[in-house]
Image 1 (cartoon, rainbow over the protein chains, first blue to last red):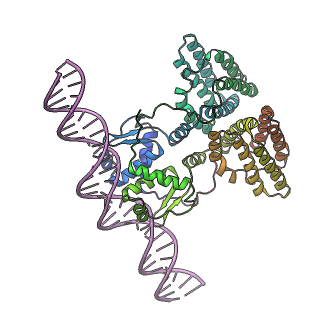
Image 2: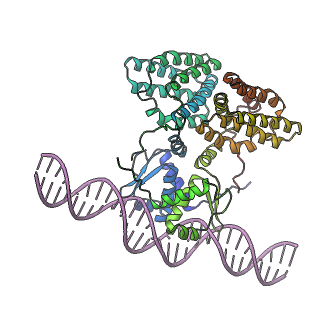
Image 3: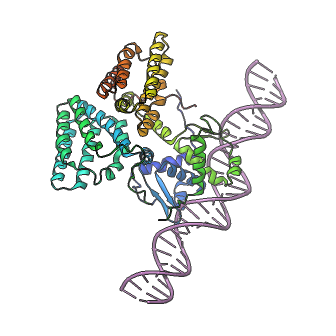
Length: 237
Length: 237
DNA sequence: TCCTTTCTAAAGGTAGGATGATTGGTTCTT
DNA sequence: AAGAACCAATCATCCTACCTTTAGAAAGGA
């Protein structure tokens, strides 16, 4: 049949083009994009057209404009921006429960689909977790723990799950359990069992391990239901 | 300390105001919003300011402009629009796995937090499912089945989970298993066990029921991994 | 030298008008 | 009744002008 030949507005094309520059990483997070006049010239469009495109990117959450200063990149994908915005209205317990849901499915799927290389990575991150505890380096522990989770989710080979997981919990991880969690118990109980299950491709055991794992996190967060929202890392204001 | 006194750009204020009109339902989905000239006058802003706000709503996915015709409402929330856009790039199997994850957690949480009223609703929808099978009315079956799922998710009393679930799978449900699924087995095996578990507040049994439930759906969808995307119902073109 | 104040250039914000392009409906013709 | 031509409504683009805010430089005082 015939092509669809989408007719797109000029500002829409500019939007798409700028978006690609951001998602492809040409304009990194935090960087200031060229001033309006330069972009006008480079793209060959008028100021209004350009501004409409930029306004779209601002509302989607990829850019932030500061009058008198410039326009800055604040996120690399629409999904990230929107989910982050939504997460900031959630309570800790809500986020934990959703993370639990995804962790569990990811662990089960990882049993089916993991590669040996991914298993190797998991073992490495688990080892790092253990080591950072000995050093009592909470910062490094959280980083290693996050990477371990991330690897398991990646091993699910479900891109939708991966996108949701990373965009929902990436920024969360930074401030989540800060000074609230003693990882000693957890790392000894949770990680080895989980990894062993994934190694043996035993989905049931993996799910059980995740259940125990999350239960430990949940316990210190009482059900203050809704009122305590997450306080993600400051939005630069 | 002093208040933050958010300084917001004019077009940002207009954006927020129009967004409220949409999310509050004053402008229903599919309806045409007033023309630019009228909005300019009503809001007391210039054309550029108004257009930048509208462009933002377009990019977020709440509006759609058609030159020579007008501007129309296409969605009621940012989350809905973005997640729908993301879902359209997913395969059926990916979506099912994520739904499984959320279904399972929702069922477990529903055991803890359901109200009696919610349990009553579940039983009613389950009954409807059964009846629609007898009538061989697939359309009505899918509707009742969706409402049952939805009620269970609502009973989790986790607003983040609810938002994600509804926005990810609402539109999906319409065209999901169309002509692909024979609900006989499923309704007899899955629903009663699940509801009984929720009634008895037995989280483990509920999770097992969901596992069986989803397994039935998954079986006809082979792992054609990625290539077959979802084909959500047409975007009104 | 160091801190505070003041000034200025640069950047984005708002405004209004002019013109083009597209669409849907109406009217006219055959 | 069917098709073609027309017309009005609406959004798309571009232009120029001026305002507001900011960061940083410059000047001044301790």
